[in-house]
Length: 483
Picture 1: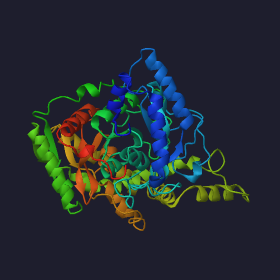
Picture 2 (picture 1 turned 90 degrees about the vertical axis):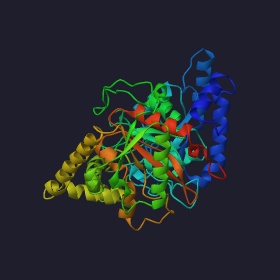
Picture 3 (picture 1 turned 45 degrees about the horizontal axis):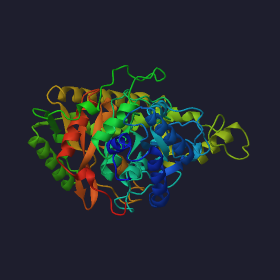
Picture 4 (picture 1 turned 90 degrees about the horizontal axis):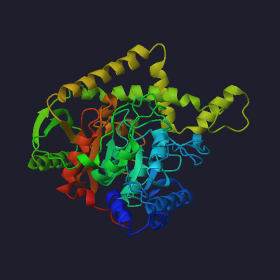
């Protein structure tokens, strides 16, 4: 059962080959057996899962259908879940039980999805390796000595290890696409505003976006269908009709114009990954696509701009965690200032503290114009580059990451080296564009991803290209040894 995709599960449930309750029990037992090696879950929700599975079986018995009805998933532990710990991977929220469901959680539950638990993540989604979690690092199932990527590394590791077929993640600078690439999954960051952020605890509000992680583009289409849509409770949600993503999967790629930016193939890219990316280009050309070189001249400024804007927004968003209203509170404070200082010092880990300080500095009176305002101007230039490129091409293709997964701890003493792993992904967040990573091969036994970017609200186009590619390749079917 654990090898089935979401689409296969939907067909099996419809054909009454098994029940949602049987499937849920099977996967919960598998998680209990294998997750101690991976540390991909923070909280398991066995009682809720079995309750939802029984309800889904009853709905099917009454004639109801739906691709997600009875399908097991997990949520990244920054989506609020009613009465269940929502920790954000932080000591600060270790005892926080959300008093409501996030819109994404509520929509998927209404569609009949079964929540098996909450997955591990970099603290407050800050990281590229899933090593900053208060609950310990997540291990990559392809090699337990390597990172799975972050910040959605718990979701990625759990799906890659076949503990469940799909999971939710969030992407602020590549945090769905990068772990998808490093664990041989398909991961999609939708257009900013396509999926509601209400109840998704914020890191950087103008960049954060929820999306699906699964083994195939077909499964991502199913999960995105359940997540997407306008939400009046979210002021950044966009009232745009949601198409049938599954219906667009089988379109022809004949004449599809693919742009390959020359800036993607500089000195920082592992040449073995470059070879795999070009092999994926050749595979798409055989399906009828037309490829041309393009330029994104302001890409070189993306990392410095991102690491001013994101920490600035984080310093503002995380100011609410002060030991007074909710979250961790220090023992026996001497006065109010001591309460603030020690509660935040004890509750936040080193990476979160680093980014709060960087953000507060960038927003301070003497430096706002020099750093934050300039970063926002660069952000606009990056968006303009993409708009110009999409006048010439239908999608943009390149590597998802410059390197395969690195060893646990290898970049801990050099945060900038970890930041550079996001060089290809952060531009989509700065511009608000949809992006997808799909499996493209292996380097030294570790997975490599190819990234596709499209114009606003063209998630269907990304899923179509990825699905056609996956019909003609088998990278996405490979399973890590032991899982």
